[in-house]
Image (tube, rainbow, N blue to C red; front, side):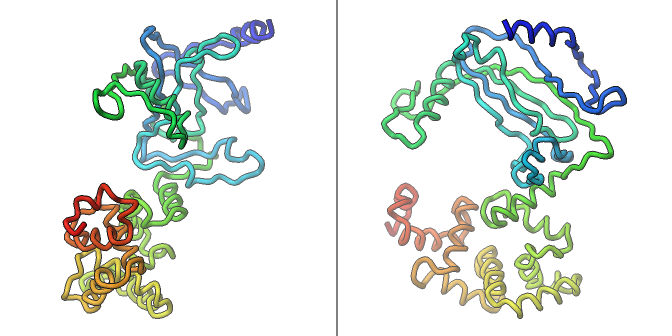
Length: 333
C-alpha cells in the first residue's frame, strides 16, 4: 500500500520528455532537482539479461557531483577515468526481487558517471547463454568447482547475440560547476597507477609531457630520454638543462631513463651506453632492474619487436612455471 501511495504522489509530478527537450537541475524556481528519470523500452520474452554501457565524449569534462562530497571526501578524479570512450556499467540477470517484481522493470545506474557533452546509454538485451555465463562468472569468483556454461562444441566460452536500444543525454555545465577534463583525469590515473603500468599510460606519457613542457615531476624520465636526441636538445635547451640537472642529482633516475631509451630503440650501438644496457638486460642473472623494465615493455607490446626476442628467453628462464603457454613457443624451451 505504501508503494502504491508513493507512486500516486510521484505521478502528480510526472513529466514526459521528448527528443530535444531540456531539463535544468538548477533554476530560479528550484535550487536543486532530485527527480529520477526513466527510459522505457519494450522487451521480448527471449531477453534474459540486460547489459548497460555508456559512451561519452572525451572532449568533455567530468563534473563534480554531490556523490564526490559524501563524508567530506574530496573528488578523486583518477577513479573516474576510463581508457577510451565506451564503458561497461552494469549487467542485470534474469530474476525477480523478493517482492515479486522483475529486475528488468527497474534497471538503474547513477548519473555520477556522466561527462559533459553527449552521453549515449546503450541497453543490450542478451539471450540466455550470455546471462547464464555472466551469472556463473560472478558466482565462480575463484571457485573452480563452478563450471561455466558454454554452447561451443568442444570449446570454452560461448556464442551469443544481442539486441540494443539506446538514448542520448547531452550535459551542459553551468559556469559555477567545477569539472575536470578527460586529460586531467587520465593524467591523475596514470600518476596513481604508474606511467609504465599499462598500454594506455605508456602511449599517453610522451604526449602528456610534451603538452606540459616537461614541467611535471612525473616527466623527468621522459625529459632525459628526449634530451638524448641531439635534434631535440637543440630546440629545447631549457628543458634539457633541467633534465641534465635531474640526471646528475639522481643516478637511479638517469639509469632508468637510459634503459628505457635503449630498450625502446632496440639498443642502438650509436648511443654510448646501450651496448652495456643490452648486456645487463640479456646476459646477467634474471630479475635485475633492466630485465624488469624490458619484460614490462615487451608485455605491453605483445612481445613484438626485435628487443623482445632475447627478452622472451630471459623471461621464460625466470617465469616459465607461470607462463607455460607463451614459453612453449620459445625454441629454447
